[in-house]
Image (cartoon, one colour):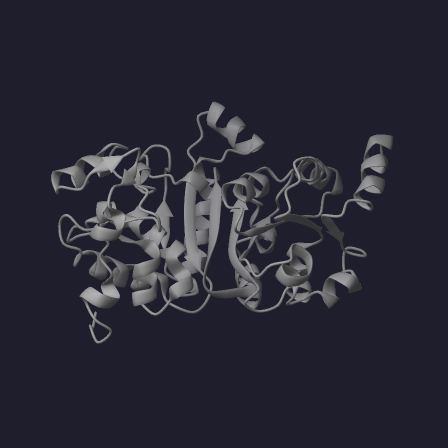
Length: 339
């Protein structure tokens, strides 16, 4: 082993944002003791926890953490030299919502409790193309069962990959496990259906794109509410928003009895362009009236154009007189409304 790696491994022991397993088979007892209390004890809040598995240098972990400071992020990898890069950057930039686990992914259910994880990202993992190694694929049945043991209901697992083999394998696994994908994007850049999260490009993705590779994205629920059915309920509520009025993601989630699922409502809106009957997704904005969904329809200016045609004034991607135009499904449809 080179001296450079030895130096990095020694430094990892001093990094306050890195937690390491004792060996390849046993989690650190201190990590086990924190099971169920990571947000409160380590991050000092009760914000949602998002994992990036096989995070490498933590490109996605860091980018997501900057994008969503109101969430906690944990990058997981076994390669200490890689984690060293992301952990050092997080410390240098004083990112308090980032931690790294240097451990085997198989051990996660020993250091994280049920309902502790709100979302999982798997970005450009080793596809393990040989059939005899398929059990190591991070979307194999054994890993999906592991995710169920640490995730909240309605949690999504995202796979972003250039491997058509892994993408197809994942579809087959989900079919066999009777799990319906919530999001299915065979070519995220070719169809201009990518979200802010999908715009993040890792070192490996940049190389794949330079080689002309197609990038695939699939997301699926690992427990609780059947996500596609949830999406359909979101669409039905959205169809009741009258022209000239707007609502937000949180209001729809609350009306559906899942107040903490506003993010799921956002994902539903991002996919609504494929739905029939049509869904007036342009009438759904964020909690302060910003047109955050404008990148997910035919072209960025279309959301503003559609709203202005209905008499809604927009300045700087912001709905003017948002409070006056706000359509609350709890009031407008009533608690007894049946979908």
